[in-house]
Amino acid sequence: MKSNKTVIITGSNSGIGFELAKKLISEKYFVILACRNKKRGLGAEKRLGIKSKFIEIDLSNYESIDTFSRQIRNESLSINYLVNNAGVMFHPNYFLNNGINVTFFINYIGYYYLSLKLIDLLEKNNNSKIINISSISSYSVKSLDWNFFNPNKTHNNLKYKRELYSYTNLFRLMFSIELSNKLRQRGFKTKSIACHPGVVKSSLGRYVWISKLIYSLPILPPTIIGIKPIYESITNQDLNGGEFIGFDTKNQWKGNPVIVDPNPICNDGELRNLLWEKTQELTGINL
Image (cartoon, rainbow, N blue to C red; front, side):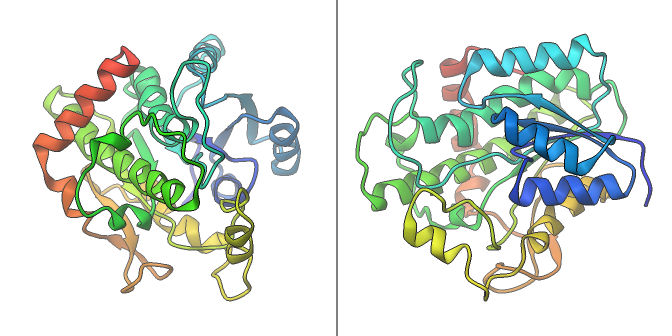
């Protein structure tokens, strides 16, 4: 399939985001590389060529997201797809100047805030989509503990970081499903779809040495395998919105992309709506 559509991919100067950009560019998509690190972003743009454009964004900062959104508008860029890919795992636990936990902001608030800042631009195009990348770690949450929403703990132990990572992935999956419902209820054309990349080689575990080792093991599938559910989410025009795309294998580390069941917590509409209300109150914006 060849395309002339434009995709924004956050966190696309390396790993899954970069491999996805490379795949889409090979099929004539134009890719906006939305990255925090200017040197790496420009380096990725140079490697990917003229069908890519680096635009700086720091997804831990409201003002940076606002600036990014203004630049997209000022340059009159037509946006067909937003791929919320950027994320951190086991990041050092500290609070940003805005008082919000860094992992919670990058992994969840950044997804919500950027999506709502760009929804009107996406609406200008038919078949537009917001793709929210989650993780199989979302399945590990058995009952919802609201203390992980806008958490105030300063723990730096691995157990807490692992739980926080899982919760942020669950929150963005719940957000993706609830966003789909709200878009449909309000007559929007844009679809919201969630997916996960399985477990593949990446730099995701860079903050903890044992995770860094695990994510570089030769037995892990190559990074390009992880883009399959994301690519499916973008290109499958039969998706209605609200789906979760994973793999057709038991552990979902790899395989062929298919619609999978999310964590059962995601099916509770009251919990999803409460999450939305809490997020709206925290960020000050709504659909």
